[in-house]
Each structure stands twice: as structure tokens, then as C-alpha cells.
Amino acid sequence: MFIVTNYWVSFPKAWTASTGLSGTSVSGIGRVSDYLKYSDRNDTLFLINCDPNLVFELATALILSRSRKPLVSVDLVLRQPQRVLDHLSCSLKRLLLRRVDHHILFHKDVSGYQKFYGVGPERCSFVRFKSSLPIAQDASPDGEYVLCYGRSQRDWHTFFEAMKRVPYPGATSILSLPEKLARKPGLLPKNIRLLEDENTQEAQVRILSRAKLVVLPILTSNMAASGLSVGLNAMGLGKCVITTEGPAFSGICSNEVLFVPPGDPVALAEMIRRAWEDDELRRVTATRAHEYALKSGGRDELYQRIIDAIGFWHQSRIGVSVMRRFNEAR
Image 1 (cartoon, rainbow, N blue to C red):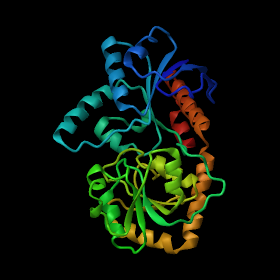
Image 2: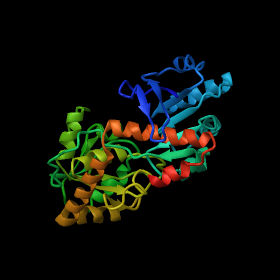
Image 3: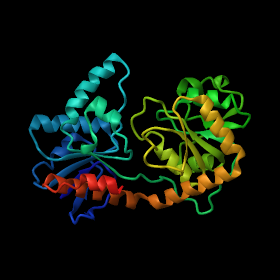
Image 4: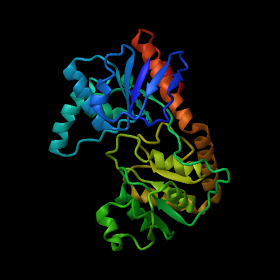
């Protein structure tokens, strides 16, 4: 099999799945026209990572050209439609997604994807994600503040209301806040400070390393793995993570993080209080989190998990029903 992907040059040029399927790849392909150049090869598979627009554009091109080349997405982030235009767009996307043969996801709960976009579990496989920061060898669960970090699908209202109920110092980065709040820092609760953020890996390590707790409140409308990347980075640094029950962590982590109901500032404040004051709870949770991050490995291990998922899916295409076994094993 020959994989054509938008992954950068680090994607393995020669690979072998655990099923025995093997092949080569070309990476860094970003334009639909460049994908179509490989359509003449009989063994071509298109693999699109974390780029919904490219998935939809390539699906459209394949439909128009009547090409049956397999199209597989990785970490396709879909949003719950909110407005009338969203629902109209959703209908079109649902149609185009019929042309995507398989979805490799970092979250297990696809109920929202199925409800709004027709993407059910039989068309998906789950693989474990990994930290994008180096895993700390001398990880520490201690720190200075309660940190809410990252932007994707963050429930800032719930975080702010929770922090008004506790006396501990809180923080967020100037890049994490929505623009309207970053322009008016006076709207923040008095115990939350803004941290400088140079948008570099070093800045993220510095900000996360100084946190005593990392809080990831996610909007109730979230259907994807929002917050997972920052969460795993914090876990790799040995931090205790508090997060919302939902697709990003539920069914993936158990006692490696502390869960609270979505949109509940009272419950979030109580969990912050418990984890801040109970050193044993915080340290045990942080230790489990660090072990989880270690087991998740790095970039090469993630690539192998994706390749294995492709291998199992390919077997299912040729009549060997193994996708359920693959997902259960994960």
C-alpha cells in the first residue's frame, strides 16, 4: 500500500502494520491537486490528519472524478451545529463524509458524530494519543496556581465562576483567553492572573510546570478530543488534571485524571478545593497521569498505532471482520 498524506516528513517512508500489511508513503502533501496526481497507482490510500477542510475538499474531488481511492481521516474534528447556517453546512458535510472510508480518532465516544454527521463507531477506530512535549523524568505535582490552558472548546464561564468560589491563585495564558477577554483583563476574577506566552514549546513547559493543578473545563457542546493534547502534556509533566466528563477523556482515562460534570462551577470549585488541599489525592492522581503519558510514548509510537489501525481496517475491507476486536483491544 502507498500512503499519500499531509503528515510532515517525519511520517515513516517505509512501514509495516501489526497485521503484516506493509508499504511506503509520501508526506507533506497539502493540496487536492497533488493528491489526485497519485490516483493512477492501484495501491494508493489518502490519509488526512487534522484538516477538516482538506478532507471535505478531497472527498468532493473524489466524488466528482468517480475515483474509488480509499480516503482515511485522522483526528477529524467536527463541531455540533448551533446556528441555522451550521445545520445547512452540516447536511452537506454529512453527505461528503459518506465518501470518507474510515476515521481514526483519539476519542472513543462518537455519539455526537453519529447523531449530526452519520459517522458511527463501525466506521471509526480509536488510537491513543501522546504528549507533544518531552516527558519529564523529575515530574512534580506541586506548583503555584490553578491553571486553565489552551483554547479549543474551553468553558471559560464555568472556570471563572468556579475560581470565584475558591481562595487559591489562578492563572491562564494571554494566548489562551478569547480575544475579547484578553483585551479586557479587568473582567477576570481577581485571583486569576494572565501569564505571558510566546507560543513556543518552551513557554508551554514553563507555564504547565509551574501549575499545581491544570483545569480543563470543556463546553457541553464538544464532540471531539478537545483538551486532550494539553491534558497529556500536563500529565507528562506530572501534573494533576481536572477535566470535564466528555469525549476527550471519558472512556480513555479513569483514575489518571479527576472528572467533574460539564458546566457545573460548584462541582468544579469543590474538586479544585479537594485537589489543592489534599496532597495525597493530588500526588497519586499526578503519578498515575505521568505513567499514562509514559505508556503513550512519542511520535513514532503514535505513527505505529495509526499504521496498525490502517492495517486492521484494510483487513476488514477484504472480508476479515476485525475492526471490533481492534477497538476492544484499545
